[in-house]
Length: 128
View 1 (cartoon, rainbow, N blue to C red):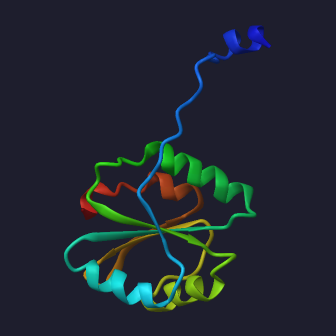
View 2: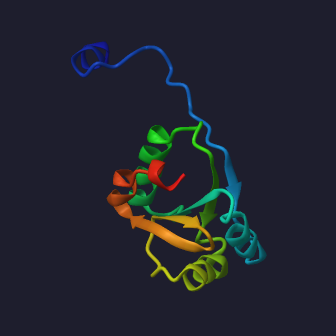
């Protein structure tokens, strides 16, 4: 195994897990709060399917690339456990449901959104 690690640049040092300041999005009433808060601070919603390998991969890439010093509120929506909240998110912010999906909310509306691999191409900085 050490040969493979050397060949592919593996390290014996354990990788430190990056922890994002996620806020769990679990109720429809939170959507009104997100819309209101978006008038003064950018709100970001990550919709994730816990049973989808692509969603997991995209989320891991998002976590690795996310700047924890970015001045946003970051919400995590487990769309399988909170299907009604996921559906209402689409209605409220006028965005067709996809999974995984990232929504950027400012002044009560979705100013940008992306799904699948495009999530990690979306630069959050211009929206902060």
